[in-house]
Image 1 (spheres, helix red, strand yellow):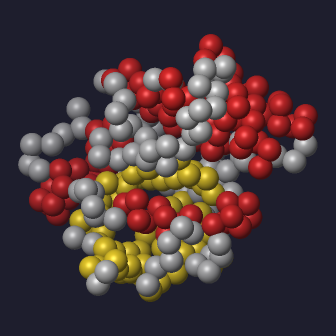
Image 2 (cartoon, rainbow, N blue to C red):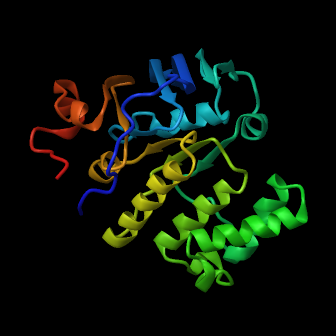
Length: 259
């Protein structure tokens, strides 16, 4: 598929942590899902979150946005403890937005109607809403389908619409849960370029992406985290985790390579 990300952020002048998870643990029905999870997401980086099915990646996203409370541990956004802060205040006050694994759009509404519905919640002034909507339609090449109901869009078009909706509030943190799921090769390539461009357009925006498409995700990540057996087993630049013994043993396998 070729190189998508021609550079990777490997050093940070101020080492600003946009997200910090400290000793996060969570159980469902006496079954432990996450145990003592600690990691940071730095300002401006694209962080890939990988791991087997059912390991807790989506659960971590739900804890970060406030849909779930951990049994133990704390969540920090911009170094501020938000563990007890509700989901809507995290979105408004801390600029968090999420692109969910499935759904994320109103299937019976057109592209334009979807964008209008969200803009009325996150943008106060009507003129600002109209300007931002037109900008998103142009940016994500949705003009030809703006009056089509979202249930009739292709997988790639629906993902682009969902990302456009998430950007209406000018978030500083974007979480994407399995954005490459169900996409063909061309749509995957287009989405990879879209994500990298988000970083280029706003160097302070942080993006955390969870997906099973390891090659597609590592191609655009500055740093990656591998979850397995309830814990983080590897963390670092893509080149580092590809050579990590635990990552290969528990997730990648010996024959995996990124090329």
